[in-house]
Amino acid sequence: MKKTLLFLSLAVIGTGSVLAADPAKINWSKLPATNIPMFYPGQSSYEWLRSDEHKNAAKEVKRGDSCRSCHDEEDAEKDLGNKLVKANRLEPMPVAGKSGYKDLKVQAAYDAKNLYLRYQWKTDNAHAGTEHQYLRFDGKEWKVWGFPKLDKIVQDRQMQGIYEDRMSIMIDDGKVPGFAKQGCWLTCHDGQRDMPKQFTKAEVAANPMLTAIKKGDVRKYLPDSRTDPSDWKTGKTVEELAKLKAAGYFVDLIQWRAHRSTSVNMADDGYVLEWRLGDAGKDMFSGNSDKATHAPKYMWDAKKVGYKSITVDQLYNGDHFLVREKNAVPFDPNAGWKEGDMVPDYIVSREDAKGSAADNNAVGTWKDGMWTVVMTRPLGLTNDDDKNLKAGSVYNVGFAIHDDNITTRGHQVSFEKTLGIGVKKGTKVDINATKLP
Ligand code: HEC
Image 1: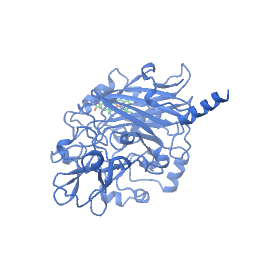
Image 2 (image 1 turned 90 degrees about the vertical axis):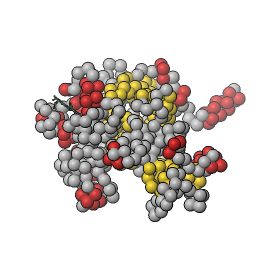
Image 3 (image 1 turned 30 degrees about the horizontal axis):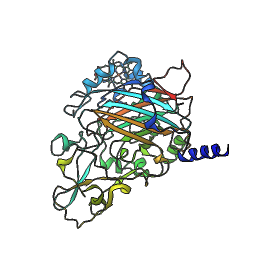
Image 4 (image 1 turned 45 degrees about the vertical axis):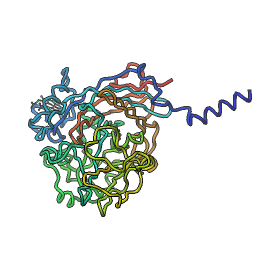
């Protein structure tokens, strides 16, 4: 009897926690899957949707009608995406060869500790999009190499497109009016990067709210963070924003990044309110460029990986992650650098990730043209920058895929969806997480 008890308690210690499943061991083939249609949205901003350009729909969108109340035909997303990805009134800078539509397969499970979200989608490229921007030595200086494909420099073929793939989910617990019906489009506005009437540096520098929160550009924001939701310049005071946040007026934004988070089996943890903010604490990635010299802070440890840097011809052939605790050493300026040597522009570290920003784990594998990503998100988080996910509840969600070296609006997105965590049979949700045995 005593022996059995000892054995049992050791088993508990050995697995760390008996309550959490190992996402790799979940039998996903037994769990239901939902296909989420994902389409390229171009510059269909909050403002455009409320303008007369959105024919016969402006009034309804302003009133708060859901996108899907009109865009409900079969293949609505396919038709929208395939049109919007090419040159049109909502796409001034089309990316050659980009797909306007993707099927996203989503499965969900939970146990006493976590929610597990499994995603599968096909990539445009026949290789994993795990590369991110580099620092390249040009013979004299280190300069950033590789930019996202919507950047003018890439479109003008003066620079290679390099940017990590991403899988993102926005989550609302019902505290953001409108999100249930219009999803991510609440956060997407004119004035943002790659959007119409993009901000200028001078406008940002003169903006009271952005200077108060120390931000140098305009990113996703929720309508109530502005006195006029359609004008990014009308930000509320820091005190007013704090009140909104305390009342739960924000959406959680979890991003799995094929370079900067998957390299340490994590997904990042952020939220959207007056900006696309990171949670408190420290992300798993940091810039690798020294502020003063622009030279790298870290390089690869040649003793461990066989090289201290790579060159452009080695891209898209294996992963080139620079992980502080695994394969990095401090940069040596006297290591005989040659023109064309490249070191990642970001250093990643699980050990450095801290606090609320370090809540989410994820595993990503790419095989035969398809990403499979499993995000693990703890239930019951009580941080003031997280949605406290609970079994038995329903959340409003929106998904985004960034594929083929691109960022900002160059993604495929979903219309508004619902995610239940073990809700009762008969409750209408798009995705219902299954309780694990
Ligand atoms: C009242 C019905 C209605 C609602 C609600 C509605 N739309 Fe539309 N939408 C339309 C119609 C009709 C068109 C086509 C009009 C046109 O071609 O100008 C359209 C066009 C579009 C287009 C441009 C497609 C193209 O071919 O150029 C986008 C993008 C779009 N809607 C997105 C949305 C989103 C996102 C929402 C939710 C925030 C939404 N719509 C809500 C009716 C609606």
